[in-house]
Image (cartoon, rainbow, N blue to C red; front, side, top):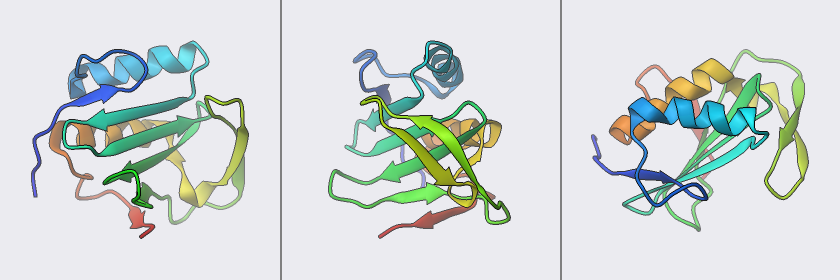
Length: 127
């Protein structure tokens, strides 16, 4: 199902971000040390992008009570540190629950553009 909705980066601006400008905004946030980015859609969905600048966790939530769904890297082993949240918490995640940063950017760009995961994306529902 193709859903057309607009997305804003929560603490940056009330102005919607396009899929074309999103990656630049994410790069700028990472370069300034803001490794956690939340986007909110006009339909009330939320999209989280948390990175350590090498891998990222991408989570899509339907609403505030939804456990959501997240991108996975099924063949990955081990874990990665350095996922620093805006509250200062420094997390470590299994690599299978994160994806390489370029893949994460592709996924987030597609969700912002179309409302859906790319057809070839690997993700699991946490519901």
